[in-house]
Structures are given as structure tokens and as C-alpha cells.
Length: 609
Image (cartoon, rainbow, N blue to C red; front, side, top):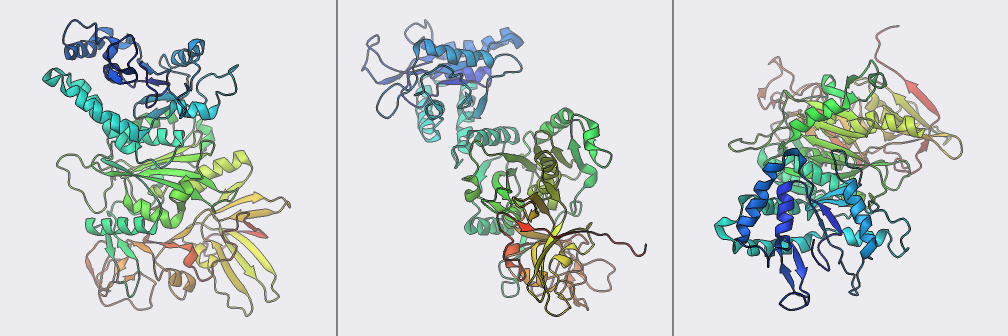
């Protein structure tokens, strides 16, 4: 340790031996009367041995790095302490002296294979959480805010420090151990990701850093949710061949995507529920042991984002500010996921500002599973069909998805969170997460009814949610077409909110006859996946019109005519469109308290019985 008034936290644990040697090599202290120089000036004093090492200090560093080989698995952990951090008035923040035993206690709690001392991951190492140091019996002046200051890792200040360290290392020339240069480069890389984090939430930053360290992306982008960001990502995908911009006169601000033919739908066979007790997953789910599955996935995710950008998506399921909404953060290497999540959920900076240290957020990790390693050329729709896993760790809870970029496999706020994880949360917390539409029905007399309905896929759920009544005087308004979260209100009635912000519907069969409201909603600001393209730059699918066009480009990019014997659009082709554009959206669709449920419908698709 050294004597630094800022920059260095109260205590830091090195990740590995070489990083610990790096820490020792850069010790910096304010000069005191015990050393030559100007009091208060910072000088490097590696390992506190600068005046006492009898040989080349670079060789001394090398001796330390190689010494690890003698210790095997019995090597001690390395920590860096700084008792001397000061506040803006120049006063010491930490009381020091005998109270340093509290730091030593945390160090002891971090030893062994299963450390108990609470910590967060930072670019410089493990740092205690704000409540990780035992403060019992201390003066109230040492509070949570004081601990925050003592443990802060300021990325801007550290980046300046790294410049100085690189200059300091130059004096050792070629004799400087390569391991220390590698540690310096790694630290700069980690700060490249950490610096961009627009939040002080330690838990969130720590998790994102862990995911970055595992997935090894070329860059990290924290999503803002702005229209500018959306436009830039869409244009990025146009250049990369993922998106084709539709005719702006026919379909303003809308795009067509064509997926890999092997990645076109949810993959129930690759979808797992991981619980310690197999019985808790039940006979209707694919079960896997959580420890074994986490081990397998960790291997797959190692380096999986190499050459790509890691996007960090803070999102909210449900209206912002509603006590019944839930938060999540999805980490993904797919810009397609980002733009679809902007439509399907509330996401970006506004949401991030609401996720503080005490706010639960679901950790969602997604990768298309195709790293851009040396010599690998990117493709318009990257995926890894031979290694697809959509895994729900319901007892953590968290979601890890690998290998697919399509629909609910990748938009983890939808089926993964809003139904599978939320159904578990609802059971524990006393509410319901259901695969239900929510519609409002108003009689000619003005009496209003809200109905939820649970239908399997392809049973007309979206069409019913946006129904145009054939009987005079009745009106239907849509609250949601797919998912309902229901709770008991203060008045004892059942209330429902729609956790989604958009519609992710099946395109084939949707027409002005079957669902006029949906067709109006799709007129602009929409994303279409695996539908056909008309010669004039619009979209088409089976059932849209009575007579198909004379020629099209089908969902695989091939020429299509009515008699060719192939479907023009994939049967599971989709549209993603904002719910706010729906002409029959209910005025209360974003009511933070939800709408009162009067009736529950269950239905299916049976030709008789």
C-alpha cells in the first residue's frame, strides 16, 4: 500500500498473482520528511523497495512474477490498501489506526476458495461493497456515503494514472517483464468498458464488467434508448446487410430483416428451466442442473463476443413508475435485439436512472454465439444453430441465451422474463404473470369491461385484442395482445397491466379483414422479419391480400411467383411495432395501477368437441 489522497480505494483485491505484482510495481506515495524530495509530491516506490533493492528493479519485478511458480495453488492473495484518502477539505476520510483492523477482517473474509467478504468487480480488482466493511460500533460519521467515497473507482482519474504508469515503465526498457505490460494493457481495456458506464450502481457495473471479461467484446455500448441511437443502429444494420430499408413513401421508417433459415422461431427443445430440485421444473419443462448448466454455458460464452460490440440494455417491463413494473438489464452482441427491445419495452437512460443499488433487476445475458475471431467474416444474420441454449435460472434469477438471434430466444424481456421468470416471481410475491391479451369493451350505454384471454399461438389472440365489433354501438380498445401481469388492488379487485410496449405478432394471416387495427399500426416505424418484399419496396405475406402479387422476393431473398410452390413469407414471420401507434389503443393502457379485470377467457383451436 501507499499514501494517496485520492484515486486508490481503501482496499482492493487483485484478481490474479500477476495483477498483484503489477499493483506492487506501481505503488505511489506522497513524499514525507523521511525521504528526499518535496513533501506532498507523489513518487513511485515499487514494493516499498525503491531505496533498498540491490539490483535492476525490472529484474526484481520479473523475480516476483516467476516466484508464483514455486507456490502452486498455495499462493497468498494480494491486496492493495490506502488508509490515506482525503475529502474535499483535505481531511482524512478513514479514521485509521486501530480501525484498520476492520479492513484486515474483510481481507480475511476474502481468503480461501469460497470467500464470504462482500465485493464488487471493478477494472482494478475486487473492491468491498459499500456495506462490505464491518462498521459496527464506529462513529456515525463513517456512514454509507463515506464508504462510497472511500471505495470509489474514478475511471477518468485512473485513465490519467495509466498514462503516467506507461511513462514510468519506459525507463525499464526491454527488461520490464511482459506480464506487467500485459496487465497494464488489460487494465486500459477494462477501463474502456467501465468508463462508459453512465451509472454509479456498483452491483450493475460489477455484473456488466464480469460479463465483459467473460465474453471479451471489442467495445461496450450502454444503450440510451434515443431515436438517434435507434436510427444509427438501423443504418449500421442496413450497411451490414441485416436490414433492408423499405420504401419510405409506403412504409416510413420501416425495415425488413431476413434471418438465417436455421434460426426462425422459438426453440422449445433448447429451452431449459434450471432448479436444484428437478421436481420444481416439473414434467412440462426441460430441466437441467443449474451448476452443470452454468459450467457448460460459461465455456460457450468465453470470448463469444470477440470482434463485436456488447450492448447493455436497461429495460422496464410495464409502465415507468408503476409499482407493478419490473426491471431488467440485457447484455447482447446483437443490434437487432437492441432496436427490437426499444419497441417492445421501455429502455435506455430513463430506465437506468431508476435502477439504483436497492432495485432488483433481472440479469439477462444473450449472444448470437459467433465471435469474429481472426479470419472470420461477419454475416447478415449471425447465429450458432448447433449450440442453442435458452436457459432460465429461476432461483437466482437470471436468463442466459446463446446461439439464436430470433424473437423470444433473443428478446429476453418477452417470454423469458415476462412469462417464465415472472411466473416464478408472481408465485412467490402473490401475483400472476399470464399469456393473456387484455381488451377493454364499452357498451352503447358507456359501461366499460376489461377482459383477459389466454389462447395458444395461432388462435387469433392479437385479432381479438384489436377487434372491430360488428354489432352497433360497442367499442373495443386494446390494452395488450400477449401478456398480462395481474395483481389484487387495494379495493380487492383483480387488476392487469401490459408489461410490453409493442406488438411482436405473426404476420401471415394478418389483413385489413382479419385485423384492420394491426394493419394501421404497421404503417410506419416497424420492423418486419422473414416476410416477402414487393418490387416497389413494401412487404407482403400470405393472407394479406386476396390475390398475391405477380412477383415478389421471398423471405430467403429468392425470386417468387404464385405458382412456384413455396411460401413467400415464413409461417412464423413477424412484425415488431409500437403499441402507441395502434388506433384502438386503450387510454388506460399505461395506467400505473392497471385496469380492473371483469372476466377471464380461456380458449383454443378445436374443429369440434
